[in-house]
Image (cartoon, rainbow, N blue to C red; front, side, top):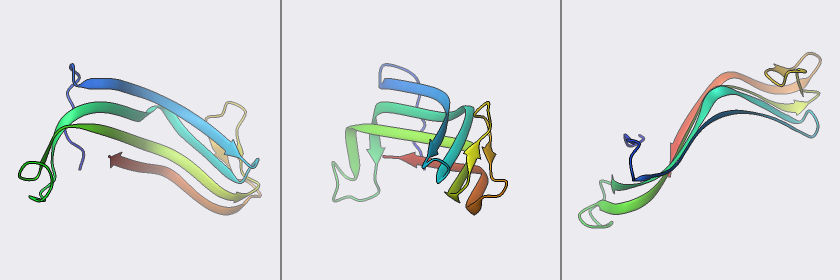
Length: 108
């Protein structure tokens, strides 16, 4: 679960973007739509639930990196490609594994 981050002096970096990637070419192909990649670097108190960590389970002023990807398309295999606009994964004639509309959230 991600901590609620408020944009104030504790936020060192906040990025909202999109991306496309083609490695191989055609072996790993991914598209993250514009505005669906969020990256935040901040300082926050993190409650771990483990009393052996920090002060009674709270890490004070911890560096927190949170990212969220939503609506991503991913292909891993052979023969994948990006369309000309680099906004979609093309798998016609390709062999491998495909995920459409995938989402992931992580906090570290």
